[in-house]
Image 1 (spheres, rainbow, N blue to C red):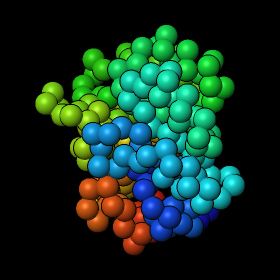
Image 2 (image 1 turned 120 degrees about the vertical axis):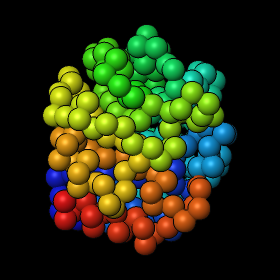
Image 3 (image 1 turned 135 degrees about the vertical axis):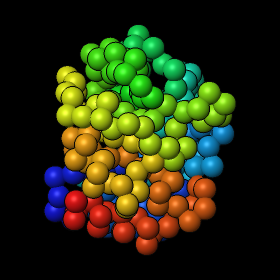
Length: 215
């Protein structure tokens, strides 16, 4: 799909979803290593799925406050191109992970109001990419993948020192507005292309990627 908008489809758990995502033109695919998520995969699953990903498509591991031991296991068994830190990792921890594993690191930052934007400036100094996501509710048991949007005007056409990706509640119906209002050139989605939580729908993946191309 010839487009200058790069899309990451996260939480993939089967070969059909991998094929649908990569055939439709996704630039990144994401594997979730967080047991509380319905999209969680084992090391064995992720290793097999990674083998299905064509060259040129980045394989991303999403982790939440992972220890060195957990990251050692993931990086030791799954061929990856990037680590996505989606917890409360400090800037110092981001730097440690980058140095220890020699992989680019994407740091997720939740946004609910203007007071959250300063964190993007901080993490933009230490991460290779930023994931600008909707801030989860206080009672949420997952830091992302909740299908909620935030006010994209808060980040409208802002710039940081590194590339960034917009996440949070993106759908075929709102993606055109999301691109215009936020100025994003990269998008991350998960629940919008699922049949049920954790089960991707190849038809919905194709539909979303078509919507991005038309937008």
